[in-house]
Length: 452
Image: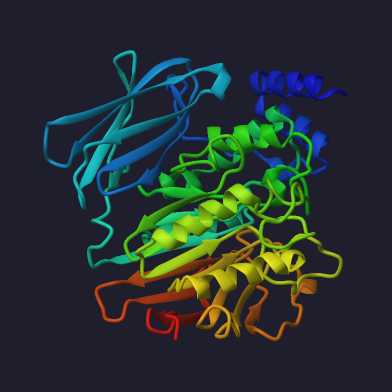
């Protein structure tokens, strides 16, 4: 069946019934219908909002809010400081071309301020309650405590929902997803859109993001296929759907890739795209080799690291930064060690302090500390968090000389807490499961991550 006919039947199923959607999507991606069980939303039949709203990128003076609408047309978001009547208004138009997804953008906000928001359509209020709010962060250089909940590899199941609830209980200032959120395994645009919609409809996931920002990159399954690289056919469809269903600060160079970055308190997070460009062009750092990140992303990363004034720089990708994986797995930074080693040398040559690595994908919790004093100027730590769902991979417990911790724990995530109210600033990384049991923790400070 051609992609066009596949897309037609999926969209027809979306109109005709959720059960048929699940059967069609499962048949196209080779997964069971149970894996794609839709989770009902709390919307009434009259609502013009089918998914969300979710808070997106926040700064001390601006906000982005995402939603998917069930009715085409212009939708209005109104925000007010709590207890005040003055309004800020943004509008966005839902169309079939963007799969009815909208992002409202607001500027002129005040730092460290709580704003309640409501959505109206044709003069009728669609959403507005005590859970619909966002809080702008303080200025970037203000002493503050910042909590980031970081995870990867989630499904629309009870175990993943338990993690979303646990994250909510930890009250993070932002949620960061490193990919396989959701599992799609297709680059057919309608399959991509259907899967993102099913994932966004999970009530506990929606509740988590109603009042705190979501940032995300992708990994192989949401990019389009297991263990794949940038030569995957149809990756433009994957990028289109990713952009439609997220409210990141940016998406690659504007035309290619989905890499982005954001600053929150004492940490700047660089969300790398380790799929779109992989294997598509010569490496800019190693003659005769193919690239992982691509020249444009490398130049963006170099410039961003040089310019960053954050005490900590978290470099996060869907794939892990080392070669210790299950037998036969090709997609990891270990297949491009010349690019990882070039990054370490750049950190040392430019005297970039505070770098910490993060990854997911391998369905285990792992911590590695690399002996990079001679290249980077200090030991660099890698934090691996996976999976949010139940699928631990025992064979991924591979040895590595830099390995500090390994555990195979389902329904796990990483809580990173950065404190700039103390001297020197600290970063605490705590891995925990859905019940709040600590799997491992470590503390780094800014002096430990400074070139000698």
